[in-house]
Image (cartoon, rainbow, N blue to C red):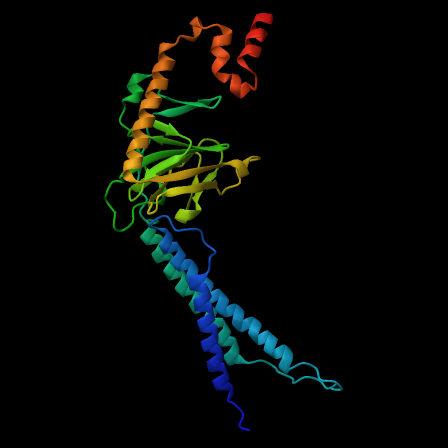
Length: 329
């Protein structure tokens, strides 16, 4: 019986390994649903790396298994193995191939980073508005000095993910100021004055997030968008993207920021354009009503029980209990 040449076996094994690695690399379910224009770029790069990793795994582990069987110790064989000194061509081969792979992946990753806008983060204005939070109620507050409030914003250079080559030089459709604090994300919409604990955006809009941190380093991560950007104290960063699929997606802090880091989560809600306009109108009206109510009421004219009444739920007591406590005091 004629023996099959080793070269033919090698060719067949190469075809099988290639087919398996490509199929798994393109049909895995390791990533969440894509929901941004940038997600396919990241997934394409991930799929290539996974395909290469699977191929290397099959080659290395397959070789080990074959050698375990072929060169196993036979019963009664107490002789020494062949004295192999080395193989220069083999050394060059398994050094050159990984080198070429790493260089190609490096060039590919730079191209993906550029297409996502990593080389074009622009400057963005810093507004004078800030947010005051207490007892579950968020009130958009402005500086008391009116002259400061009307001062033209300053443009600060930023780092992060900016405009893609297709949107370079074009202003974003929606700008949102995002502040990370221990342990929450605060979203302020300068164009409408809305402040929210969730990010609401319209599908298909070019969105720019101006990120900052109040205390320590945080990291704004939306797995479905395949985007993550650090929020740094005193250093503005930017994240620009386009959402492509309506839905609700988790927002996670990906930087250890303290004892309750694991609970620093919120969500980004991608609306249709009509639903986003409706949400913005409703929240503008609601926040204006809250602001008018706050301005109209003079705390000095309220009794202790009336002043504390809105916070009884947060305090874990009933209104009747509060009244009796005040009277008893």
